Length: 280
Image 1 (cartoon, rainbow, N blue to C red):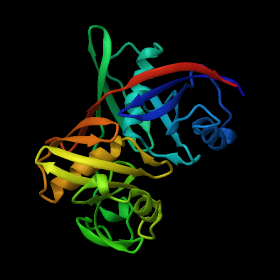
Image 2: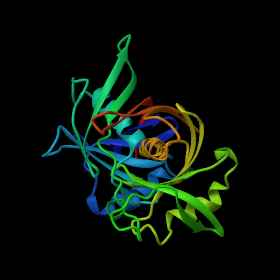
Image 3: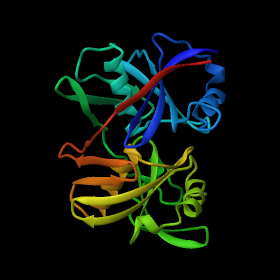
Image 4: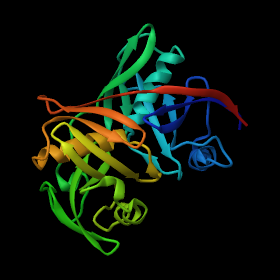
């Protein structure tokens, strides 16, 4: 199977994007294909494979498969790169459009300066806080705010949020010193999370600045996570640690997150094209 692709990154979270209006990938091969092309030694190398597709509900449809072949509901850094591809490949001349995702219909808005794409702001919708909808076992429909969880022999304090995909946020004294390779997989597959979970380790520097590192479900440690950044701000605000707007400092860059008065989360950050090619 040969197809053309572009590779993009947002805060170091990198993706292989395929224009589904021009390319046709076999549905039954997508999981295996994602594993192959995302392999950093034998493939192109990426955190995920994203398909730009037509939609019956919105202007476009986004599908994302993780590096392990599993399919995610959504990806915050990925949808900014998705929006960049839509513009770059001439699929839309509009600065804003609707995108159907597994987390609902989202609306990215492209920001330009000197006729160049400088960033993308995405209306990420409303956070989901009811435990049974995230989902988190054992809490009914209650909110899970700084509740104890034991993993890898340690008892931690978790706050759980869904941005269309599940997140477990752990506030720590120093995110840079957390044994993320030990705690991340133990929490991702914890019995509390029937659909597994993304895991964020966050340190509040001040009311408008959070340092965060992420263990992504299906991708392990990545340089950034857009939905995780949104979930982290929500968790910090719920616990009274910050206000409703903050800069999230990730391993790969920075994102601006706002929990607005309409209860929607707005994420602003970069999307950069790295290269284009043909996979054979």
